[in-house]
Image 1 (cartoon, rainbow, N blue to C red):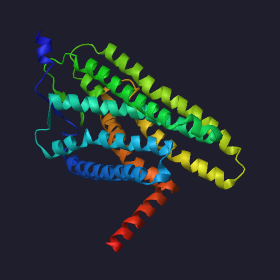
Image 2: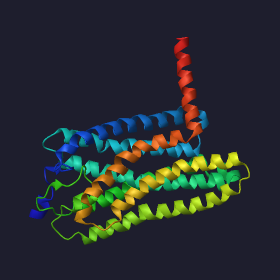
Image 3: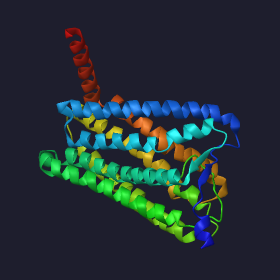
Image 4: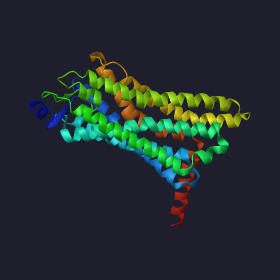
Length: 315
């Protein structure tokens, strides 16, 4: 009974890099700039994909889902991080920590699956172009996207429940910038081997299996692209897939490092930086990668910009 009571503190203390106060101002600037760029970039992709009829395709439907994920993903952590950096007490309420854990984990899990679905979409588009509209019809796209979201949130509820049920014996100093499963498990005052094994198993399901399927898809894609006789066709195919592949490497590479390596005290600071990369930097880079390498998105942005200027002149 005492353990249960002690496991529900009124608040947690997010240590971050509080032992290095000289880092707080640079981190604040980096977090703020990254967050602003993330909001602007992902909102732009969502608006362009919805307003331009040429982008009403499965690829941009999934890209819109990815941008929405990244918007919510960063919003679940960055505002609280900015507040804590400016505050001397770097606290978060128990309810706030639970909400942060649930949302961050749910959206991260959903993104793992969504990137796999996006690779399948590219595989069908390049390897089965004549059957693309039949295979990737609107209803199937909706079902695939819904399956990603439902699976991600189900995993979050499961892992969060396991993590929050662990007795902490009054420990409330989280050695991290935000509430994340590995950091909260380190607060437990009992053996967490079973929880770490469960976390590892689920991480394999949500990280290694999608990565394996993505690599298989791209092996077939490369074979198909090399058979294209037109140099322009090959360049367009590689350009379309290149954006997705860069995002896959950035997101999965850092997430696998964080969740599939054995826990060790020496890796704490590295773990903080890695989680910042896939939690803040990658969502900021995604819009840049997709817009800079994608002529259709750049063209749509230019057209919408010209239309808005024309409407202003008429008024």
